[in-house]
Length: 272
Ligand SMILES: *[C@@H]1O[C@H](CO)[C@@H](O)[C@H](O)[C@H]1NC(C)=O
Ligand SMILES: *[C@@H]1O[C@H](CO)[C@@H](O)[C@H](O)[C@H]1NC(C)=O
Image 1 (tube, rainbow, N blue to C red):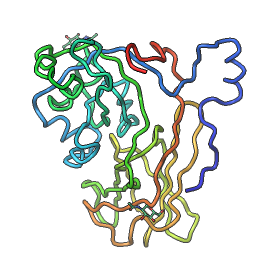
Image 2 (image 1 turned 120 degrees about the horizontal axis):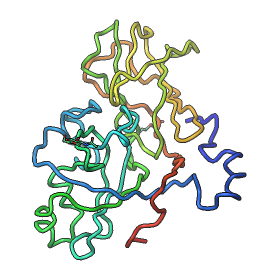
Image 3 (image 1 turned 60 degrees about the vertical axis):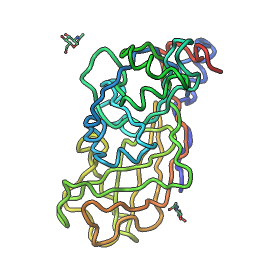
Image 4 (image 1 turned 90 degrees about the vertical axis):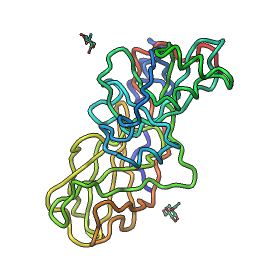
């Protein structure tokens, strides 16, 4: 993996501003207050606006979340990880639950809608039925790095692909705390990079993909800067197949800072 630039978000001008605005603009653990609810249907988390389909069940042991438009960000937020805690100290655990964004909710009262199982993980061991009864609970959440120990980011050939004319891919097990904002592919051994565009959710597509084995690079960013993560070897074989999942050979580990104003607070209400 080669990074062209590691500088994210807090570029020089922000350093200057920090003397004026000490409580920042830039924080990697911005805490937000919100409400969270659950749905007993597993359909939204499996179908999902991000396009992960049934693979959502394999991400993070199935602890995936349907997120509001401001977190989903027209698909940019897909695959992002969040730690969510409910705030009633009599019922809620201090660690809450860690989720991966896999869908968009139309519900305008909450930032996340969880499955019943994931929602109940916010409770203390014996309090989950009490929490479930509450339905809609006050929470605080923050973005956290995604961790997939021992796994590289993988590339799945999306079902809308039509070999060899139309290539659509989605990324799974996207580590770190960054957003994927660009994807390019090139025939291995050439530097003729061709860009893909976000089709919807986590799905990127292009007409007339390069022939032969393809390498791939992904632009990851957050805030004000970005860098390319390069897969150095072939990621997609020349006979790529719809539905197949290929190892990218790279993993994103970087934590990008959020340009986070407004930030409700940078500290947990109870935790840490
Ligand atoms: C929130 O959703 C409800 C029901 O869908 C709708 O009636 C209401 O106008 C919405 N409120 C906002 C602020 O969008
Ligand atoms: C991740 O990619 C590296 C090559 O960069 C490879 O050696 C390794 O086996 C891959 N890991 C997994 C779990 O596939």
